[in-house]
Image (tube, rainbow, N blue to C red; front, side, top):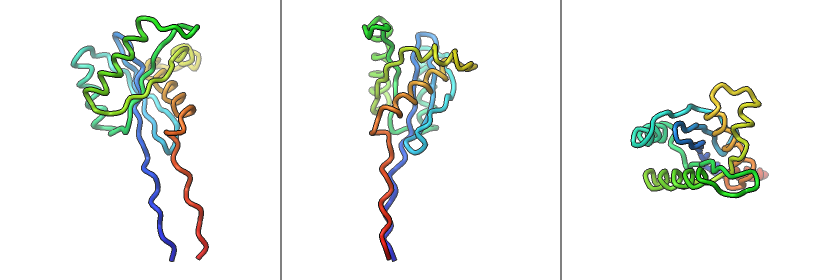
Length: 148
């Protein structure tokens, strides 16, 4: 009889495309490495974080991903600072690691794909970028089979 090796844990991620009036939300996991748009949160202030808290309880993510916008030349601007602050607030309130992803052109890409919910689609695009660029989000290869 061969010994069983436990499979690596599947990590769930929630991603956020931050905006002053709306926050797009997407989910994905380390097994499928495919991002899916979830919804757009239109609440602001504490109500926004209350809704995010509900989503965190529902999806129980291992980590969060926040899109950080830059100018086309890579320079930071006011929304860059706001998105980073939002990421720090998520980390502080919910005690989860937060990964930043460059979100330049995510909304343009979402528009060109014909997405109905641009904010959630943008969140899915940036989460997919995170999966594509991050070996940490890759599940470990299965162990080689042992001869009996």
